[in-house]
Every structure is written in C-alpha cells, then in structure tokens.
Length: 230
Image (cartoon, rainbow, N blue to C red; front, top):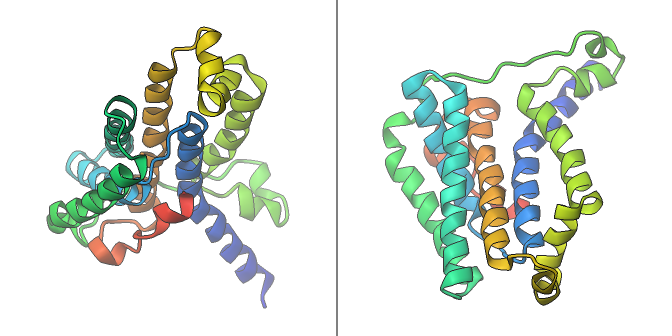
C-alpha cells in the first residue's frame, strides 16, 4: 500500500476521533461526579442538527458550536435534576432522553437536510506540518482536533493533580466524606454534569460542521456514536 494513502487514512481516523474524545471527556467528568448520563447518543445527534442549523442561518461556526454545547448542557441539566433532585433512575431518564433527542433531531432537521453550510477549515501548524509521517498525521488537522489533544492532558491534570479534581473524585466515590470536608455535593454534581453535557454537545457540531460537513438526517451516520462514548 502506498505510504501516502496509509498516512492520509490514519489522519482521517484521528480527525474523526476528535468529536468522540469530547464526548468521552464530558462523560468522564459526569461519572466522576457520581452521575451516569445515558443521553449522549441523542445529545450528539440533536446538537449536530442544532449546531448546523444555527451555523447555516447565521454563517457563524462559533455560534454553531456554542449551540451544540448549549443543547448538551440543557439535556444534562434535565438528567441532573431528575436524578439528583427528584431521585429518579439515572438509567431510565438518560435512555428516554437519548431516544427523544434523536427523534426530535430528525423531525426538526428535515428542512436542513443536504443543505450546504459552513465548515471548519484545516489549519496546518507551520514547521511541525513538515515533519515526516508525524506532520501529516498530527499537525495538518483542524482546530477542534488540536483542542481535543490538549483537553486530554488538561482533564488528566485537573482530575488527578488538583484539589478541585480530588474533590470531584470524592463526590463521586465518597460523597459523605466529601460533604464532611465542606463540599456541596449536590451543587458540584449539577456543575460537573452540566459541564460534561456541554463537552458532549460539542461533539455534535464537530461532525456536522467538520467531519460530515452537513446534516443528512438518519443518513448522517451519527446514531450509535454516543453509545461508543459511554
């Protein structure tokens, strides 16, 4: 096999992994706080449609990604309210929201199917892009892919090397002990669940405004991505 074709294929795999990393990191924060958000599959599909719709109507990629994060945060807030305040089953709430969000995206997104819209451009890093093999693989990607690299390191440092990160682990693993040490367990669980939902919500427009380049309803091929991220 031609090495150029192989490198190009691997670079495409790395680019496609970026959105999944956002969803995985979001769910990591959520589960570290003691909440399981099973709505990720529907969240990604609905945020992909919503992010594309906003970017299509405004011409702004930034607003498209912000809409994706907002959709993810709102769905996660429902999960948090149902499980933390109402003390209902996290599994049931998340699963129902996953199905509802998915179907809502397909219904509301009909008018945007196969429409041309803005797309996140590739951004090569000068100097690094010319490194043999590694340059085309890692340094000729888009800004979102670079950000996913950085977020992995930042998330690890935050969770395992900072005091707020240790508190986050505590409210998920030993909530009573965290409460005794002064942590507001309910409030922090809300914060990290919503933060995790917002990160997962960015994964949607990362597909429709970058990887897939548009919204194609069921044919977008996004159904199932969220279950991988779980």
